[in-house]
Amino acid sequence: MLSLQTDHQISIFDGLKVQDLWAASKQLGFPSALWRLPHTNEINLLISVREGIRKCQPELEKLSPGFIISKFLWEDEQEVLFLEGDIILTFAEGGLLDNVRNNLGEEHSEVKRLVQLTEDLALESVSPSRNELYETPNADSIDPKTRFKRTVELAVAAIRQNQFKKVVLSRTRELSYSDDFQPVKAFQKLAKAYPHAFVSLVNLPEQKEQWLGASPELLTRQNSGGAFTTMSLAGTQSSHDKSGHLIPKYDIRWGEKEIEEHALVSRYIVECFKKIRLREYIETGPRTVLAGNLYHLRTDFEVDTNALNFPELGSVMLKLLHPTSAVCGVPKIPSMKFIAEIESYDRSFYSGFLGPAQIGGNTSLFVNLRTVRFKDGLATLFAGAGITEDSVPEKEWEETELKCETLLQVIAATF
Image 1 (cartoon, rainbow, N blue to C red):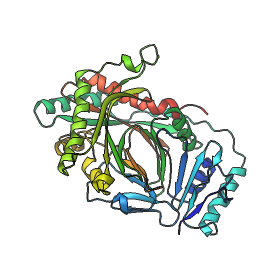
Image 2: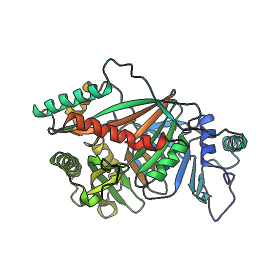
Image 3: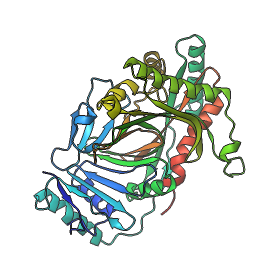
C-alpha cells in the first residue's frame, strides 16, 4: 500500500537535504531521479529501492507512479526504462513538503539504511567543492567543427536530391570533471536559471552514468483532469546581441529557414492526429519563446481526452510522435537512416524522452535536450540543429555551440 503522509505528520525524511539523499541513494546503488517541472518551485526526488530499473511498455495510463527514460532509438513496440516510485519526496525552498510517498513504509530495512547513510553523509566534514569542467584534448584527426560542417553539407545535398525535407544532425562535446563535482548542485543552479524548462537529473547505476538536462520541449503531457498537451518547438536564434544584451521578444525577426523548419514540425503533429482520426484539438501559435540563451518558435496543441472518451491518447501519441521531426527529420524513416549513417556516434538517451509518469495522476514527458552525461570522469554534452535546404554550415555549427553554452554557462561555474 502507498503510505502518504499529510497534515504535518513527522516523517523520518524530515530535515534531510536533497544532495545528501541523492549521494546516499547513489552510494547504495538505487536508481533515482530528480526533477523540477516548468513554472514550478517544487523539486521532486524519486528513489527506486526494490527492483532497480525495469523495462516496460509505455502504456502511460496503466503505469504505477514512476519515472520514464528512453533512448533516441526507440520504436513503438520496444520497452522503455522505468524507475518505480518506491519513495517520492517533494521539496520546496523551506525543505521537505508534507506529501511524502513511501511505498515501503518507514520500518523497511532499505528505507532505514537510506536514511542512516544520508544522516551520516550530512555529518561528515566536507571541504568546499568546485563544480568545474575542463576541456579535453581532441584525439580525432579531424576537428569537430570541420566534421560537423561537412555533415551539414551532405545533408543539404541530400535534401536537394529529395531524399528528405529536413534532418536534425547532432554532435557531442566532451569535458573532464573532478571527483568532487556535485551534479545536484548543478541541477539546483539549472533549476534557478531556467524556470521555463524541465530540469532533471537521473542516476542509472547499471549504466554507471548520470544525465543532467534542462529541456524546453514537451513531448506529451496528460494531467489528472484529462487534458492532453504536446508542442512543436523548432527554429532557433540567440537571445542576446553582440554586446551581450537580451534582445526584446518583440524585436525578434524570423527568417524563412526557421519558419519552414517550425512549420514542418507542426505539420508532423497534425499528421499524427490525422492518423488516429482526431480532429478536435486546439492549436495555439506559433509564438516566440525564451529558453535559456536562445529564442525558439513554439506552437501548442491541446486535446480534452475526457470529452473524447480517449484516456489512452497520451500513450498513442507518444508512439506516433517519437522521434519528432524536431530531433529526427521529415520524413522520419529516411531521416533516421541518414542520421545513423552520418553521425558516427550513439545518441543514447540524448533526444530520447524522459519524465515523471502517473504521479498524482499526471504524466509529463519531455524530449531529452540541452543535456549532459556524466560517466567515467567525462561530461559529454549533446546538441543538434535542424537542417533544411537553406541551411548554412557555419550558422548550424554556431547553433550547436549556443545550445552547449546553455548548460555550460551554468554548470561549469564555481560554487
